[in-house]
Image 1 (cartoon, rainbow, N blue to C red):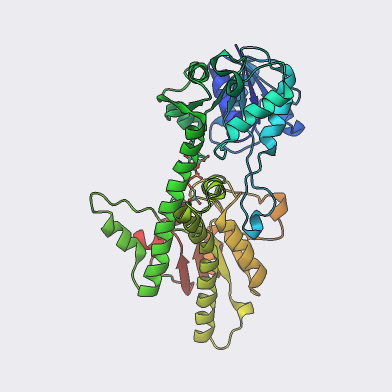
Image 2: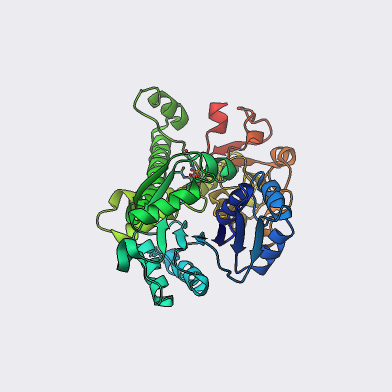
Length: 425
Ligand code: SAJ
């Protein structure tokens, strides 16, 4: 049995490697020649703990091979991005399914009767049916579930990934898996495939419900983080320590409030809720508002820093803004990872660097050298140096290195703590 994984990114590559580690023959397809070459050398082009070892073993043992040209296989897993169409910056968040369309076009020529095609990408409701329609269009000689029911030539299912970045290899195996078959036989075929490595339960539903389940999970988290972020802004107005408040409220047996922060980052939680909103704008009121609350938090943090600088200048009338050094602690999108993409901490630091006339120092213990496109836009320094030189400290990520920070700043004058590290230590 040969498995082809289309899209060798944060989901596709670990999935391909885990199948290969179970001694399945895996062909990885990607449009990025550099990524293909890297993988074929037994190396990886993304950041994920232990993935390098698993990929290296899979490639050297001959179970995993990458290419840009599609080949016949028995099962095809599509794990390509589903970003927004242009216009998202202006507030119109419509999903862009063109990568899924391109993937179906890529595999269509090598598809044969009896093959299984699984969509793993997080997708708006209806995307799997749309994928089946595209397959039918590219291969009119083969029949597809929506047209032919159980007699179809090709089995189609949606099995969304739900792994946590930083714990992908463990969660791929241990998480329960939602299997959304276009028909019951499609679901059966998909379960047979995933059972080769999934130790969690494989739970069957239809494709639309599976699509909605994935979007619901991330929207649930987004709405709950928005609640915490809104509380933090309310408590700031009312002069109440929000972290103490949340700890107290969480002592109630049926209350479990998440943690406020500088905003919501990452590649999923800030994106997926929009896939619900764009389909049902009139009904998805709470989900939309949660997105807006979380997206407004970086601006609120920047205003807090501006106020801290103004206070400092009022207390030091001999100084101007040029003399004020701001230290931004943490750039990653969450604690103890080195992923800077879609990070509110990074965006806030860049914004402050752009508007503040004095020195802005950034500390990121998980990154030694900044990615090329950030070089020159941010000044990366060590933790100790930043603390010694800073007048205003802005804590953006609750990395373990920052957790022992002192409550009483000795050298710096003001602290803006977006994660409650100081308050809770
Ligand atoms: N955050 C807070 N406060 C909290 C928790 C998180 O501000 O109390 C922030 C984080 O700092 C970060 C963002 O939210 O900026 C997202 O972090 P996260 O750890 O909640 O989630 P991700 O984006 O790393 O992974 C999520 C997971 N989904 C859920 O937990 C419901 C993961 O299981 C999904 O597979 C992943 O999205 C995905 O690929 O969809």
